[in-house]
Every structure is written in C-alpha cells, then in structure tokens.
Length: 142
Length: 142
Image (cartoon, rainbow over all chains, first blue to last red; front, side, top):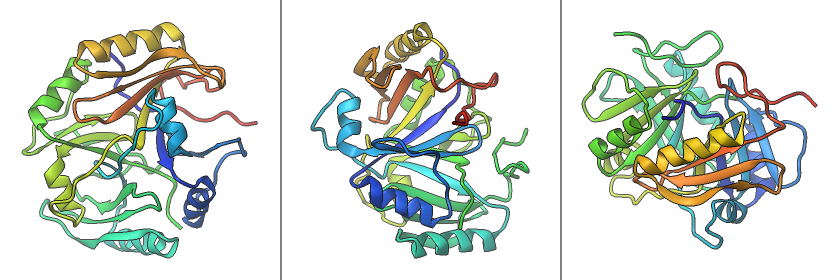
C-alpha cells in the first residue's frame, strides 16, 4: 500500500534553456537556479524540467528513447473565457496547437496544446468540478 | 500568462480494467464508477485513467501513437525505508522494475518503476525537501 499522492512531476526536455523560456513565457516563476534542473512550485506539487537523456539515465535505462503524449497535464478553469485565454497564451509562448478549445461531449469545454518537447497540456472548464479558491481540485461528493 | 498549476493528470492506458486493478492493488481508492474513465483523488490534484485511443482522439489526433516515459510522476517520502516499501508494493502490484531504490548523486535515495502501460513513477527521499504533514510538497525557501 502506498499513499495516494504525487509530489513531483518531471518533464524530460531536449533543451533546458528553451523549455525554461517557454514556461517563463507563460508567466511561471521558477525557483532559485540549480545546475541541470528547473523547478516550478505549484500548490502542493512541484513541476520539474530535466534533460531527457539525463532522465533516461536516472530511470536506469541510459540511451532509452522516452516518449510523450500518453500522459497529459490539465489546467482547469472556472470559465470558457479563461480556457481560451490560457490556450492563446500558450500558443503565444510557442506551444504547438493540438486542438482549439471547444465544447466537449461530457458537458465541458476543452483544448490541448503541446510544449516544445511534445508534453501535452489540456486547458478545460468542467462545470461539474468546482475549483477551490487556491486553484486546486477536490472532486465533489456524489 | 496562465496560473502555475496542474489540476488533473491523465494516464492513457490500453486496458482500463487492468490499470484500475493495478492502482487499486497499491491501495488506492477510486471515486464513484464512471463510464470509460477512472479517477483517484490526491491532495488538490486528480489522477485519471483513460483509454489511450480515446486520449489520442480527445487530443485532436485520432490514431496517433502516444508515447510514455518522458514525463515521470514522483512520490516523495520522509525515509529510505518508506521508499523501499513503496517500491516493493508497486512490484507486488504488478509494476515493472526500472531501477531499485538506491543512493542518488544529489544526496537522496530514489527508485523507478513503470505501471502496466509504461507510465513511469519515481519513489524518492529527498533530505532537502521536507514534506508537509498532508504529504504535499512545498519547496523550502533558500
């Protein structure tokens, strides 16, 4: 049995400077500089950027080709307008468009973009999932 | 500018039943059943399991082959013994071993495993990163 939590999300990137610039262009502030890694504090979770080759080595499989796309990170927003604004901000920062925000079959509104390394972000409004005032998400009881 | 946050992490999986069973075997409790998707509440963040084909379609690129490995999710623990226990629990639940927990060059202790679809989890103890009582992580000030 392990605790039901995640404390650090690490994105393997080709060019740390390029990736740091991309996330800084979203307005995100990284912590104090460290050699070979960049951290962004979120609410109770940290996002890290780390060289993709270094990450493969750290995972115990040096030289492995690590893939992207099958794990997505989502930012939820209270309104469709905020989803549109976040999507536009990401494209302006250099993201690749995957799907422009649109009505989703499940009753919400959602779009997708990819960061410079193909890491996929969703921006969404889910009317059934109210956000906490601090922007964190706790699923409502039935 | 977008808020510096993630609210939902989605893992694209081949077999939802198999993946749900894997995470349940870690002792994790999913929320009420929904068609085609499984959710686990974490502290302020939700982990979702969703069909890999469905995810590719949702991302606006039906038929795309989505890769894994270049984004890792980490669970931090206060002690090496807890890292060892979490790693053992994951293997017992059917995870693939990538790297057994060992001393890391940065002064901590870390191991890696992969879930049934190749999504990579790290289990680690970082002596410079004290966890909050609720298990969340806020990086210390300098």
